[in-house]
Length: 98
Image 1 (cartoon, one colour):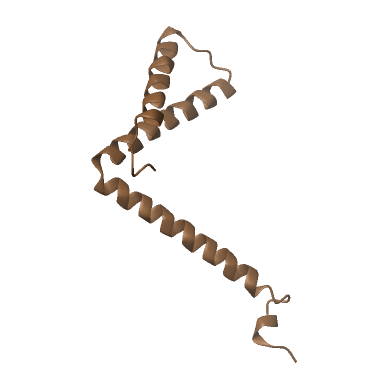
Image 2 (tube, rainbow, N blue to C red):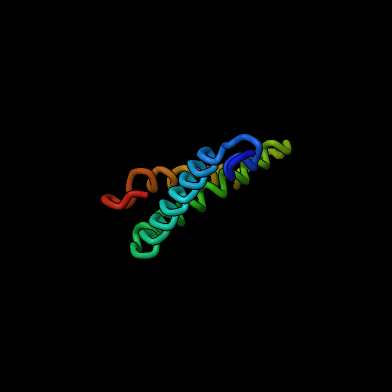
């Protein structure tokens, strides 16, 4: 005879509960972060700057992995994005940093 906890074949219910708790905590943190962004104009601006820079960097990495070369316009864009990234890191949202 077996108990309900043994139906999965290993009694690993505690691991599943911990994983669910971790996921729930991650979701809660994400929701809190999004609420802060919505309430704060500075946080929203910082988020959009970081998102733009991140997407640009991802595109650049993908482009380089395909063997594409950079022309002068791409180099100028890269310099501008580096300046924006530095501003976003150093001149962000003081108290409510995300």
